[in-house]
Amino acid sequence: MQTAIIVLGILVVIIYLKWVLILTVFPFQVIHGQVIKKWGNGKNIPLLYKVLKKPYTIWEKFFRNGWQRYICCTTSG
Image (cartoon, rainbow, N blue to C red; front, top):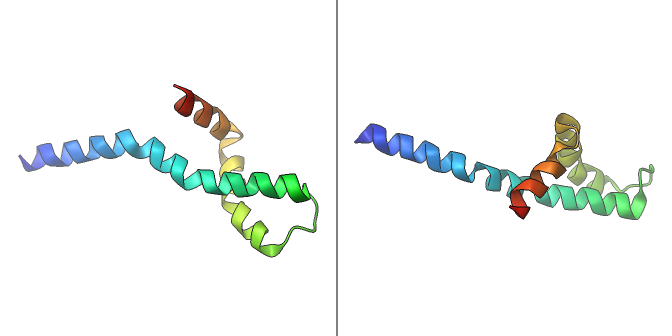
């Protein structure tokens, strides 16, 4: 019985993992987009925005633009 509960818990986590990723990355994606829209890639970006957009920049470099494809596929289907 204990093993079944553990396996069921792991399966539930796996099912909701994509939504957890979306909810954690999307705010940083929005901040990154607003920074690019307002200041471009210039050097005059305020420090607070540089710090807030850094997690998404690292995420984007790691996945090489695959995040947008993942978001489009998971939210449209």
